[in-house]
Amino acid sequence: MSFGTQLREYRDEYLHISQKQMAEDLGVDGATMSRYESSERSFPIYLVPLIKKIYNIPDDVLLAMILDKPLKTVRSFSNQTLDSTATYKNGFLAQYGSLIENEPLLKEFILRANSLDHENRHLLLSGMLNLMQLFDNQTGK
Image 1 (cartoon, rainbow, N blue to C red):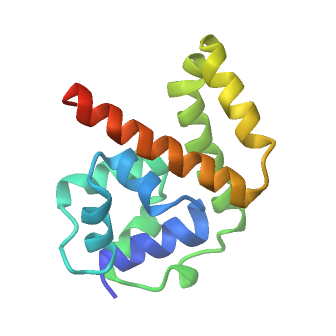
Image 2 (cartoon, rainbow, N blue to C red; image 1 turned 45 degrees about the vertical axis):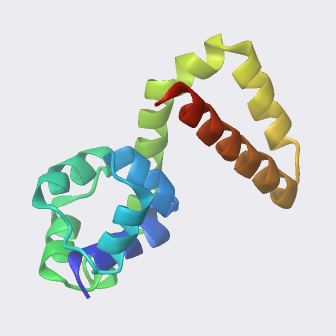
């Protein structure tokens, strides 16, 4: 295993976030994040302090990831998982909560998306991402 594969395990098992979300949080391309996690590309050292801060990774866990030690042998993660997830969600809400609260159309979109079943919500969100890509292409972003 490598740091990237350890990070993928931590993301999947303990943070319960998507690879795409982690890539956005770290400011890297999704394909690049995939290469980090599959060990096709070395994880850059300058991102290590950022992931520690964003996801509130304890020192012993981060060290185990760096030293390629099995994460499950470091400590019991039941409370850690809840703490990391709560810290991440609180950080997300601190960053975007006022945007959601102050934009009625965004709030309505979230409420409507939430009312859909998983498959239809996925279709809606995929369509919105495609629309946003078209918008970015038209506006040159």
